[in-house]
Length: 369
Image 1 (cartoon, rainbow, N blue to C red):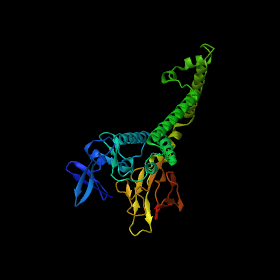
Image 2 (cartoon, rainbow, N blue to C red; image 1 turned 60 degrees about the horizontal axis):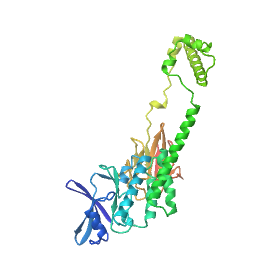
Image 3 (spheres, helix red, strand yellow; image 1 turned 45 degrees about the vertical axis):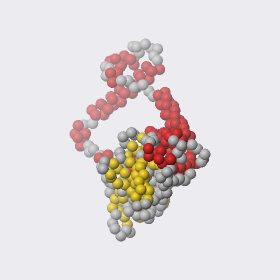
Image 4 (cartoon, helix red, strand yellow; image 1 turned 30 degrees about the vertical axis):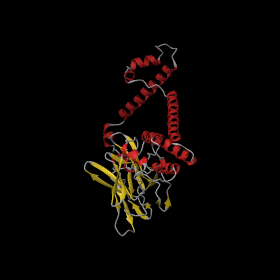
């Protein structure tokens, strides 16, 4: 199967050739003559005694490009699964074979006008449905935001489900819903716990009450039978005023000229973090200077911030993350792995890197500066 892209007038077309096509196939004719939700519109042409299929991908972006730099959230993954479920219903309605759908991130498109995902129907079978779906969700783990609890809960829950090999798309949607529900229940339970242990903090108007009124509260001028909330509030006021009084006394005790002579310490919050990766042992010098984070390195010029043209480097190989002026590396389930000082790191785990470390991408060594 050969895939190419062309612009034809005001249309962007993806052309697929090198496949076996029966021009009288009723299923193919049904898709050509009907607009079916969830399937990329297509047309068939004959050229040099060979049939080819043209897909209208105008206003559409490939899934692999959509989440190459912007990571997938829980809501976005749920919407993707929901569109998958709708696709399966349409396939059944039109008596089409779901094994003719290509579940490849390079051939799944997001329609920016409708906000829906569309899939390519190619008139030849592409392997068993369950295996294709399992591979698809394994691949999606590269695109999710691993700091987003919701998407992690859904993605890994679905990935475990696909190991059973007897699942349906309805099962996947139900699994996503259940995992979202569990997470929300857990967050609500945590919120209730936090509320129970939270001490009431008086509002600004209460803080501004006069010192005399506060002293009257301490001396019991108010009702001596106080509620728990009032006791907590009084304790807070007492601590607040004592702390404020100590600060005032400290300022009065310290001579002005000493305060003037104090030097403020510059912390790293004023320092712009920088990172440079310099390749060693390569014929052509390679220097990587990330200007933004997260920063993706791989051989796909469309999906990565920095492209390494090497057969051993994966399409999206790894990414660099900056957190609180520290740098971390995440392997994106690459084929040949990512190594720090000779030790292979696990996929989708953030590992710290420091100046002087040797970072290896497949078989290319870099020194961290």
